[in-house]
Amino acid sequence: MATSDISSPYYGMSDAQLQAAIASAQQAYIELRTGKKVVTVAYAQGGGSRSASFQPTDMANLRLLIAELQQALNPGVRIQRRRPITPYY
Picture 1 (tube, rainbow, N blue to C red):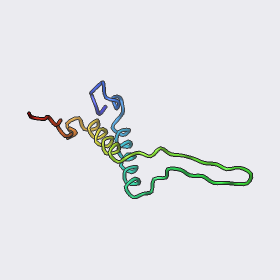
Picture 2: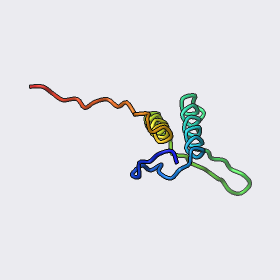
Picture 3: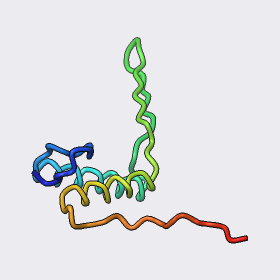
Picture 4: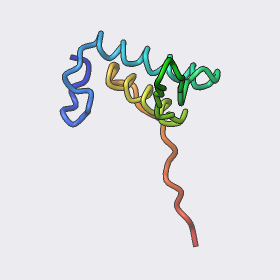
């Protein structure tokens, strides 16, 4: 088991499952960056028409997903997030 954090949504996944999820997320990120991601497809055939819609995913969420999966696979890796901005008066 890769992650020992019981509150993690990736708890119980094997290393192979996490690596497959990372590869899938990275491929989706590449497809989104290169404009290959299909959002809506519609066609007419014979007497009817069909359509399929896919929910677009933004790149920030994909980057965060990839970082979370990498952290779950390697618990020593920490996600570097921006620290909170605190105003001084």
